[in-house]
Length: 313
Image 1: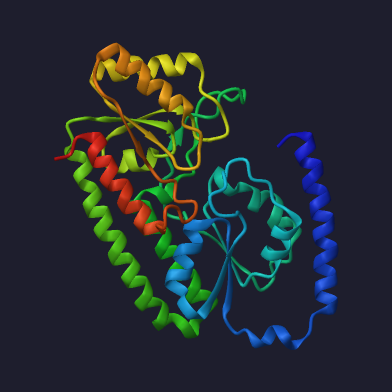
Image 2: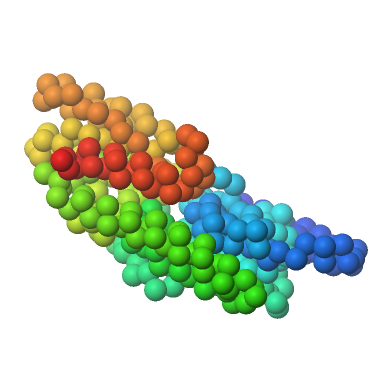
């Protein structure tokens, strides 16, 4: 976080504290009319899990707006107010929403609020940092929710958190959780087919699919690293073109809502060098509903497209 961002955060926190104090001073018994558990999630996949499992016993909201780049997100005063009013506050863990732990939680009163890291029990993997950040080596990859295997762990953590926050709803939550768990378990089994492809590497515009690649035994090579807020270098594009021509890879994956100009460059360059058509396919980041598809539907569509790119019969 640079100095300008830090100043904005400090100002936002000051405003938020004043608004929280005013809200507490002016509150009355009207809040008692809503007896649902108020769940605040940092972003969409966790909100989807909470809403699916919690059903009518929860009210769920997100701190990050749908389909927003999570890596560059900075919390606002309203985020702090929303987090302060939560009964259950759930986050992804890792660097993707570290701002919640570092900046938001210290600014709110967590007495009576259950705060849960949904990736507890997930074995983190490491990915390439952003170009130009000055960091060397690797950093934790936050994109756990894209893999059914890791999503199974996160859904269980959300279920257990809801049971702790609302013990009276445990039986209701169990029924909903079992349905979601069955869906994710089937997807995990279906994703195992990706190990049988005749292509072992996917080319992606953004290296967000490390857990999917790791869990289902293929590799990813990205034009940019873990964050979508960067531009690829000429050297990186050249290396990807060489890789594709040498290994006869003729698919490039892009993400809806993000720039794909460099994917088009790779496509046209490989086609001109090999004379082979290159197809552009989409992989969803699942940070909000897209193309009339929810989290599970996007995960299912990713499987279809990955099978094509990996040459799974």
